Image 1 (cartoon, one colour):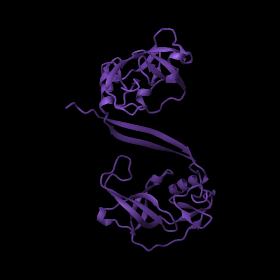
Image 2 (tube, helix red, strand yellow; image 1 turned 90 degrees about the vertical axis):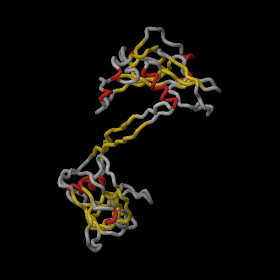
Image 3 (cartoon, helix red, strand yellow; image 1 turned 180 degrees about the vertical axis):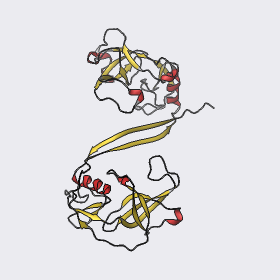
Image 4 (cartoon, helix red, strand yellow; image 1 turned 180 degrees about the horizontal axis):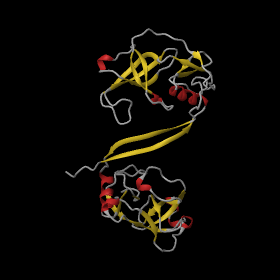
Length: 320
């Protein structure tokens, strides 16, 4: 039985957003150990606050302060915390309706085990020792024996040095296992070849292969080697440098293009090098430039002009 290919993959990027007056007040309040909600026209208090009423779409600006104590409305035990989660030891995810609020806030509850957690239990905020204006200023919730108390109090939402923007890291870790078609494609790339698969019905050659024709819906298994040269069908000029990405440490501007390899009926994408960015054009004939060593990657580093005359538009117009 052939070895099943797999590889750990990570998709990660920093998401930067500016804050409106409601979210700014909420996060700045957390920095100051104050939990704010927003009141709707019908008197409900929403925590976390939102800028528009989810029922009426009316803009909301009426801020109120609620208590740092509340009641667990539902929960789930997390036996294996992951990187970046609130606690490094097992904990419970809980929805907590803070005293004075009508909606629940999702956060972590520090508890010795699932037997110590129950719906209806009373908890309070455990503040982080260092706070900067983020939801992580609430380190977690902790059990707290007390009666429900406290009514929401009006709050101006004004603080010194308000938080006006945040950077939220987004990250997805997963293991990818290609199927038969993709595995063959990857194995061929290791030999500096590009292979696709031909549909037995429409006879189109798809690169990368998918194991089935997306047009006809039938299985494909006839491998076809394509390229190595191809034609630029369309392209874009990149003017923003990729951040925190070692394999894209490329000076801007540069060009990313859709390239129809000779013999393929689907264009793949690649970077264009060896030519000034403002000289790249549709119809440009290009060839792959492979990394100098196998450790550099299992795909072309970029494509460069072959020196051939440009392809006629009619030869690639269906691949744009």
